Image (cartoon, rainbow, N blue to C red):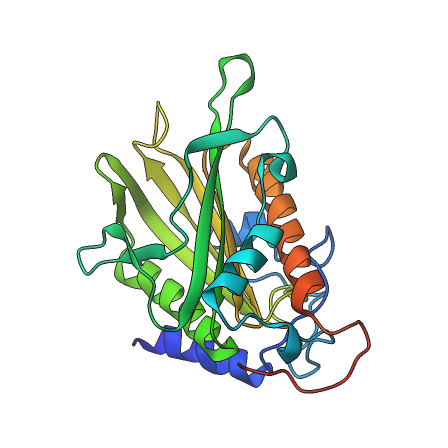
Length: 274
């Protein structure tokens, strides 16, 4: 593992592996700056030493694949959550007994879940463009790990993949190019809403007509749960509006996770990892 990924995990563990709050207009990671490879926003972020105030409740964490799948279906976005005329993509849902794995050839494949993963589900959406404009392809994904530490290593793996594979093949004829990523532990870059967040950007080729098109992806953890969302399509001019659309339903999914597994607000106690 390269130093960047290892540092990411170390930073997360020092932050205490907990999370609090929600992204907002004034307190979220700056999607536009991070997605364009800019430095992390400064000014309003708290320091990581302060630590988050809301924690996952060990008693509420799923311990079986069946319970993890039920949690995912309770928190993941649907087309109504996405809004803006979104409809189900094809395929709409992945097999919850598999997850996407990036091979050494920088090609994505769905494989059986590893032993540290209880369940995973990805949903795909399409938003038609207005007046002939380029549409969007969006995703929502939730993974439930067995422990909080497993989720932390999942985050590190994702950042490492962007370093190792700045170009990635999604499927025959569809690729991601020019990928860059930024990682924000609790209290960094305006991240006051999750244990750790990642933002990745680049271009998608072959997914939408007239490409390459903007690509943007965000992922965050709360306890053993990893939540992510992505977009492909649209235009550079409409990029910020597209990112805001993804941020909105991503935020709702993360809020759903906290409502399902967090301790009541103000409750004390250390976070459990199992």
